[in-house]
Length: 76
Image 1: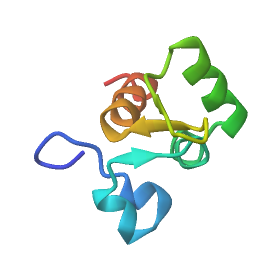
Image 2: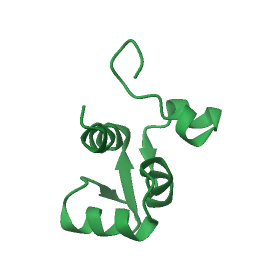
Image 3: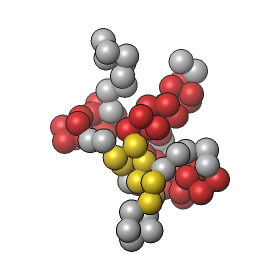
Image 4: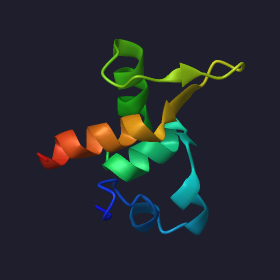
């Protein structure tokens, strides 16, 4: 957690550009959460993760949702 109360995702993936990223792919979220991309896809499809869809039909997950799921998984 940072002093603002938001999770630091940069350290989880080790890529500086993710620090300011607002939307994530199912693959990126899977890496952050330590689950498979198929699990993230199923969670999006079932509504466990609130996600938008790209024009190509792929799920796009907002940063706030990733942070919410991380907090749940960590028990915060």
